[in-house]
View (cartoon, rainbow over the protein chains, first blue to last red):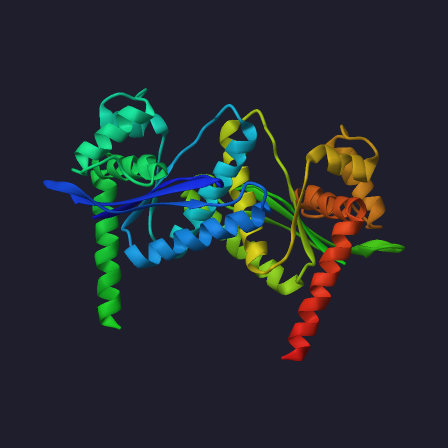
Length: 177
Length: 177
């Protein structure tokens, strides 16, 4: 079971890919961040995010994409960019028939640290431990995305079962060709 | 000069295509609405919006796409869906090298009615007059999208000049092949 976590954003879009499953220690497969220039055209920034995320989906072939569900933030302008980036990521997954799951920041923090109000440092410490890394994840912008992927692995055993069956069914179809 | 206006949304995404230019009466080319079921998976709803909007872009080949810029609304859930839909529309345009322009609802209302606080009925009346239609636009969900397209034609003569030059340059490149 492979989950690609996405902490969406236009200025920084964090990506974290984790393998895991029942009775299996989770393993970090990749971590990265897509950055786009704040002064660039919004449509071109979305295109850059889409192309880089699509390349990662095609390279790592996740079973599920887990995206942060943002309800509100202080800066409305940032929220709109975040939602637009989340939209193009979800679209890229849908085009590849990869299911998309949404988790709120507090669900993610609670899943990895036991505390829905954990701060950035606590989340980074827990991710380092849980993925048995020798140092906090790099780039640091990928931390929340890795936390999202872990959260999804632990919170959604039923969804994961379905995603796995879908993947197996796809495999069977491909063989049958 | 052809503008495809988009009033973004997941439940209803309004589309209005208008031709116009300096010293030319604007003409409605097409109007429509993409609807997706409120209970469907968000990623699949975004995929449906993207596919239908892309088909319209490929069929009508607009010079510019004008999208409503939403800053805030009362319902945060609706805002996120609206922003996600706007994101996939902007992405579709960027993939086709069609420039994307953003206008706020009050800019649009002011452009078509002279009043940034005009209500829906006033906007519909003005659109009917300005496009010399025999009845208010159908589907009614396309009204704001047509207003966006008109607003863009009138507010952005310089942007339009650039878009036209880009289109001509693309045409020349295509001929040179």
